[in-house]
Length: 458
Image (tube, rainbow, N blue to C red):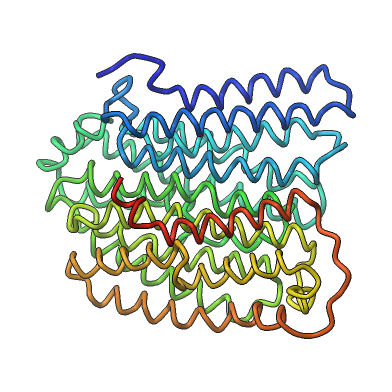
């Protein structure tokens, strides 16, 4: 065990920025609140830089509860790298808002909880991380204080609280039968524990993590929050928390459950199949682009659960999950950035987008085709790895179902893409920050796809 605080330098950068932002917001005049967003962005940039440096060093265990390994490195880089453009997107839209500083601080705290969720190696830290990632997100969902936002925040909170209680019950049960809360102790203790108790505790633990991942049966909040919350919040909560949730789920399957103690692969594979199918079927009927993206994220959660199900069964499971989750986060956030820039939620509002703004239109096409898994985008590489992991783990039926769902998803994405190519172009003056973020994220999605060989080699 290493007790050097420097091992948590990326997290400390974010925490320091959040504290400084909160303190500064108490004394700055309303016209100067933008400085808080600048402090938060600087903290995220510093955390990202430190995380990139830390990724070149050997793995270790910090404070006997925080694992620094490739899963943590990717979680850090993906979370900080996608939260930074969210802060940039929010800076312009929140300028002059009475609670501008609180908005940026809440985003940083939720991002910090997400990283802790993915790096935890102790169930008690996992629960604390779950709360830190969730409570700021509830406040963000209702930040607009309007009817739809309040309803979305209430649904989000109630479902999170209910499934969080189940998660805590699962932690308690696993602690009782496994005689410890650290993942290493549980792996040693659960092998001799009663199978029924291990099964009940694991299922209850999964409830909270599946809620954060937006997967069945904890997915009901996703479309309501995506539609009712402010667009920037919708982009954040449907993208960033998933990174930590899937990393945590993978650790449970790979590091906590001993072989033969629980039917992990069949259960998670079944949840993956239901999630991807339900998400894609529900997306077909959506005319609201935010609800369409919401159900799309549910479908993507199903794909991401495939390598989670293969944890401990396939060598490709870890690289598949890590590459896919990073690729998904960048691509999905890019699509939401276009929505923020255009400012319209109906599909008809995107008619002629390529004529009105070639940069935005191209970014939208790249991101939506990327979510399908079209080469040479990053999600395409992630899906190839996902298919490989399923086949290596002898779950060919799951790979076939994922392929069928990917093909089916083309049709509802085309409902959004096709109008962008034709029809009269409405005047459009997008905010410069939103335009830059959308183009940059679409470019990163392409770069990760084209340069996947170099990325995966490292």
